Structure formats: structure tokens, C-alpha cells
Length: 141
Length: 441
Image 1: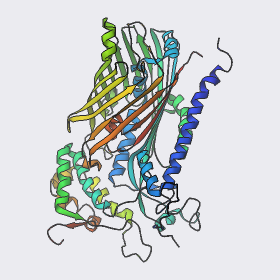
Image 2 (image 1 turned 120 degrees about the vertical axis):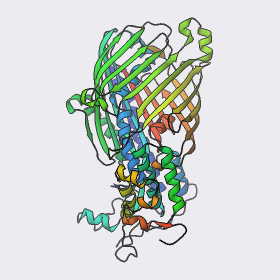
Image 3 (image 1 turned 30 degrees about the vertical axis):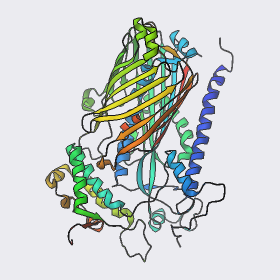
């Protein structure tokens, strides 16, 4: 039986740095350690992938930024689980598979990027997972 | 003749510094694990990166940049461009003794990757280990974000007569996810392939985010006093040339492919004025007041698109550096040229007098500089770059440097040089250790 990933927080001992303080200390040291993933991260990765592929294929940073902004004008991000819930999970999609949307966009050939142009909706057809990460603004799917 | 045991005594400080670095690493590692003793795992024994994220793409770019930046040719330039060493070493190099330089460079958290991670504490293996590793991960899949670290181990050896001689430089660069406790030991072991790089070959492994690369340069130098040139063959890039003129301080370095590799996108150029001083023009008092000036242009590749069908990003920057103002103050700024052009960073610093060596005449290729301490702090303006997942903003930046007779240690936080190379590496920390020894015994 697997343990819950969300264990109760240990109270800080008097005279000792709390877990949160240590986190900041670690961050301040620039070391960076294991961090949680936000539930809307997969959606953000899709937006970043569109910008990344645009920059890679066109070399145009401004166009990449514009398409990133256009993504958020067209869609609202949806929170999705970052862990699987076991066999009785409500979601049949494993968390790592949620990244397939960004993965597929990042591997689009430049000829398709050129064909899609500024049509963000076309990029979101790269993987069937993409539809599970976003809600179109201004109407139903 | 040097007394027996002299070599051992010279290496003792190096070993001591390595031991301190190892302790420092383990301490930070412990802090990091303690910081996550609550609702997060104590450690990720074997984090498995998942492709598709910006962090994954950044990590792929970072490992190529690491290979290029801390490759053999770059180390030759660093070792020869400054031409300033602390007192005893300067006089020994001037008298024609060989030069041995060892460099370790570590950057922690250069990119952040989404990984699958075991939620359980290390050692708590219970039922799953030894049954089916794939099943083990499938049962506990949960995504976390993990930092990617970049390491570089370099050696540089130069020897011959004062006017003519040869040099050899080699590098072993790595990108590593986890295993921080083995950082120092791993880099020391990497000295072996670095010394025997021509036999090992220009070698790279890593299609994902972890990588291991060996690169080397060998060649000769001609030092006429007023002008010096170094020409070599670079394992990775083909031809390597660096020329420096010493009256004004003009210099240029070019590394690029030849023959079939002529179109190699990793070509590197750095040229301009370095260490200009009025002392050489008969104005020592004015020179002490305004210090030394450097103005140079740099053009280098930053990462490579993994799919290979995209344009290569290049970083082109113009640098202005004024140091040893009133013998103790330094100021630096750089300007990004091309897309997203603009002021990149502004820094002010203080250093102990004599921290930067200064050439007073054209004789000899090296100058003495003192042991001491220098620190510079400032601000760096990171432009938003959504394609890399970078939101942009202004970041505090600092660099501290401590120099002994043979050993120089450096800590860099949000350093402009590092962020220019790895624009996604905000709040990354770098450690650098340089050891200079006279190879004459």
C-alpha cells in the first residue's frame, strides 16, 4: 500500500529553523531542490511549447511572445492532478502523459508551424491530451 | 633543487580545498533534504526526467552550452588572456617555467525539470524493489521539479621557451540530475579522461538531459613580447586561434570548424581591448586613478535545437569593464546586441589593492597580481522569454572571489555571465576553483 504523498507537516522545534525557513535558505543558496508541481503546469507548458517552437522555427522572439500571449487570450488553464490516484483513480491519464501535449507541440515540424501560423487552436490539435488541459474562453468546446 | 616533499606540500592546499568543497556540498545537500522533510520527499534516489517541458528543452540546451563554454578552447583563452598571476608564480612563469592550471566549475540548478520521483524515504524499499522496476515507477508516479547541475573539469598545461612553446588543454563536462553528494569525487575522477583526452577522443554521450563530454585542444605559441599568438587544433571545433597585442591590449579569439566541419554552429568569437592602462604610456598616477579598461565583443552559440531543423540561437554582447579604479573599485556593464537588445547588467565592486595585475612594459607575457579578495554586486535585467519558460525581471546578482598564491575560489549568484549563457538559470549558484602551479617543480 502506498503512502500518501501529503504527509502532515512536522512542527518546528524551538530554536530550530522551520521547514519553510530552510526552504528559503536553500533557495537563497541557489541550490534548488525538489519542488512541487502546480496543477496548471501542464497548460503553461503547452503555451511555452508554442512559443518555443515558434522561436526555433522562425528565429523571431517577438512572434514567439505574441503567440504565447495569444494562447492565454484563447484559453483558460485547467487544474489537473500531478499524481496518479491508484487503480481507483477518477482520471485514467497518468501525470507524465499530460506532458504529451507540450511534447507533441515541441516536435512539430517547422513546415507545420509555418502552416499553423497564428492559429493557436491548430497547435492544440498536436495531441489529444491538449484538450484536457484547457478551457476555451468565451464558449464551450 | 626543490626539497623532497615539495610537490606534496604544493598539492596539500588543493586537496584541502577539495575536501572543504565536498563538505560544503554535503551540507547544502543535507539542508535541501531537511527543507523537504515535511510534505515532500527527503530525496529522489533516481529522478526520471519527462520529455516535453520547457525545463527539458532548457536542459538539453544547457548541456550543449556547458560543453562549449567550458570546453578546452575557452580554458586556453582564460589561462592566457589574463596573463596575471600572483607574485611567485608570475616570476617563475616569466623565467620560462611551465604552467599547469586546474579548473573546476559547478553550476547548481541551471535548469529545472519535471521528473517522476519516488515519494518514499531512501532506504524504505519494502516490497517494490527487486520485483519490477517499471512497475515500481508506475505504482508511485507523481511529478516533481528537480534541478539540473552542470559540472566542468579542465586541465591546461603550457611549456617551452619564453618565445616559443606548446600547450595542451582538455575539458570534461557533465550535466547531472541528482547525485550531488558525489560531485567533488566525480570531478576528481574526471581528471583522468581530461589528461588523456586525445586518446579518449572528442567524445559526447547524452541524448536526454544527462551528458558527458570530453574535449581537447593542443597547439603551439609564439610570444614576441609585444605580440603573442596561440594556434591549435580543437577536438570539438577544428581550428583555434588567439592573438593578443600588449601595448594597447588588443586581442582576438576565434574557434571554428575546418573542412567538413566548417559550418559548425559552435564557432566562437571574442575580440576587443583588454586591460588597457595608461601606465604603459607614461602616466602611472593617472593610471592608478582610473584603473584598467576593457571593451570587447563576444559572439557565441547558446544551446542547439534538439530537432536540428531550427536556427541556432547566438548570444552577442558588448562588454565594458573598468577595474582597479583608485586601485580598489571596479565597475562593469554589458549590452546585448541584436534581438532583445538593451542594457543587460550593471555591477559595482570592491577589491583589495593589487588584486588585478597590470603590465608596465612589453617585456614578458605575465604580470604579478596580489593575493586578496574581491566582491561585486549589482542588478541583472532578465528579459521575458516565454519560449524558455522565463517570465523575466530584475535579479540581485553577486560574485565573490578569494585568491591565494596558487588557488582562486569564486562564488557566483545570478552572475551575468552565467545568466547570459543559461537565461533560464535564475537563482542558480556557481562555484569555481582555479589552481595555478608552476610545472618546473
